[in-house]
Structure formats: C-alpha cells, structure tokens
Length: 371
Image (cartoon, rainbow, N blue to C red; front, side, top):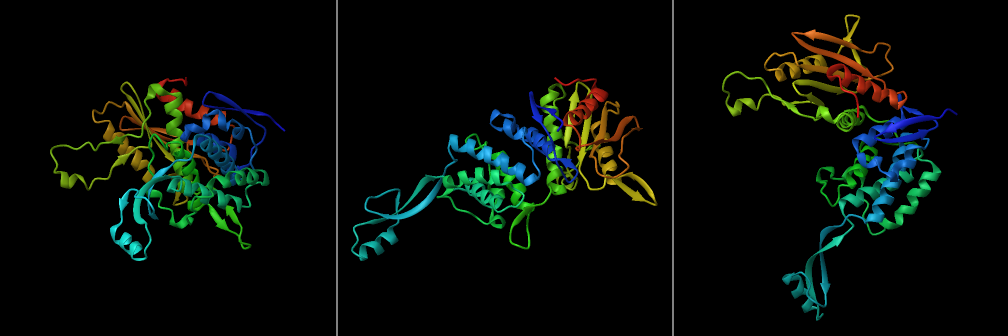
C-alpha cells in the first residue's frame, strides 16, 4: 500500500490510501474542510487526517466524534431558556393568575417564571439529532458508531428535533460558541440534503450535492490564499458598478450585486477568481464545446467594472473543478486589454498537486510564491 504525505497548513499528514466519492478523493474533502474551518488543523483532529475512509459519511462521523468529544471537555454551550414552575419560594417573576389558581387549591406555593441556563438549546439539539442519524447510517463503520454511542449519554437531557423542523437561520456564532460553527456546518451537510432512506428503513449518505460542494470548493480556495498568500489580501469583495453620472438610489437597487468568490490584490494588480463546481464543465452548442457563456459574461463584467481606469491591471479567471469530461478548459485571452480565462482544478489527485495549481495561479499573475 503506497504511503503519501499531504501538507495541510503547516502540518504533514500521512495517508495510506484514499477512496473516491463522486470523483473526489474523500481525504481531499477533509483537507478542503480543514481550510474552510481551520479548527480542523488543531491537534485534536490529526488522527482523522491519517485515517482511511470508504464513505463520506464515515469521514463526517469521525470529525463529529472528535469535535463533540473536544467540546464536551470544554463544556456544552448553554443558553438561557424561560421556564415556568410552581415553587414554595418566589423565583424570578410571579405569574399572578396561575398563583391564584394554585392558592384556590390550598397549596402554599407560587407560580414563577424565570430564566435558567441550560444545555437544551438549538446548538446541542442539532448535534444530538445528527448523532442519532449517523448511528442509523449504513455508511458509518462499526468502530465509528461505537465512538458516537459513547457521546450520547451526555445528551440525555437534550431534546431531539426532527431534521425537517430545524430552524437553521436562528444559528448565530459569537465568542462563546464559535467552536460550534464547523460542527453545525457538517450537521447541515448531513441532515439537509445528504440523507436517503433505503427500503429497509436504514439511512444512507449520498455524495455531496453540487450546491454544497460548490460552497465548500469556493471557501477552500479563498481560505487557501488567505493562509498561504497573505500578501495577496484575499477576500470575497464586491465589485461596484462603474456608473457614469448621478443615479437615484431607488434606481440603483435594480442592479444586481457583483459578489466575487475570491478577490486577490497586490499593489495595483487584481485577480478575480470565480470558483465553479458543475457536473458539466463545458456547454455544447451546435456540436461545439465551449465555456459556459453565463460564466464568461459574469467574470468579464466583474473585471471591466473593476478596471475603471482601463489600466489592464485587473484580470479574471474561472476556476472549474475537474469533472469526468474529456475536455477541460485551460485558456487565457486578452479581452479589451484585460486577461480573462479559465483553469481546471483536479480534486481527484494528490493534495500537493491541488495546492501546487493554486500556487501556480498566484505565480503567473503576481509572481508570488507561497509562504
């Protein structure tokens, strides 16, 4: 079995084999997650980087097992929840109508409403629901399920909402609960659109949907440049429309926002990257394969509106994730004085080759080497 070394951040991880899921090495999904959520680069997760996974579900279960165990050592997040109880001593606010009813029954008690710190909140409820679903999932190995079962007793007093009833929009991360962000993002991947029920009632994790994988792919590229090319000041900046003259604010609202995936800047030079993850990289028209016209028009619009002085210092690049298609775009054009093109990133290879491609883009457009 061949031994391979993969560099994640400043650590070297040893991996002995990898299995593909939807044309991507499962281990590479872990590395992409480790850039999107840098908490995965901490020592608690080093063993995950060196393990072999047959299914994406098993990878997610391993990360959650480590992450939840780590969170339990620090203590589960607690929120104030409102409770109502009939007590012999006054606590919080008196519920006068209910107290009258209690006294009519000749009970020497008062109905009270008060706030209490409790771990039974949305953050921990999602963790419990996901743990239960993974334990019923056939893609999760027996050894991993044993790890997950050891965690469940710590969630005995926590509710278990149905996946379809989880109000994801209510999640907010602050200093006291920021460690939950990575864990709950994984829970979202698992619960939102990756679970399928088999005929015998068991759950099975599907491969990443294109929508979820596209978001991860985009964030991975952004965070890679932030970490390894800090001089490029990577961000997800918006491009402003290069408007001439004065315009009423009521009219301007009709213009769509030009939100970039990755915006790299070094002195006067700018490179706008648009990360694309599709099942089909190329479009076919009249028997001819070409770049998706909407993608090309989009990056062209970004570049031209950013380069308001027509200096030619702004370039644009579509960065496609490689598919099984025979034709993969790798081209660069000078369109009206600006370099605009497309590049293909192969996610089904040694991770060092993936990062070498990203470094090559920085070298080509800025002459920058990674730190």
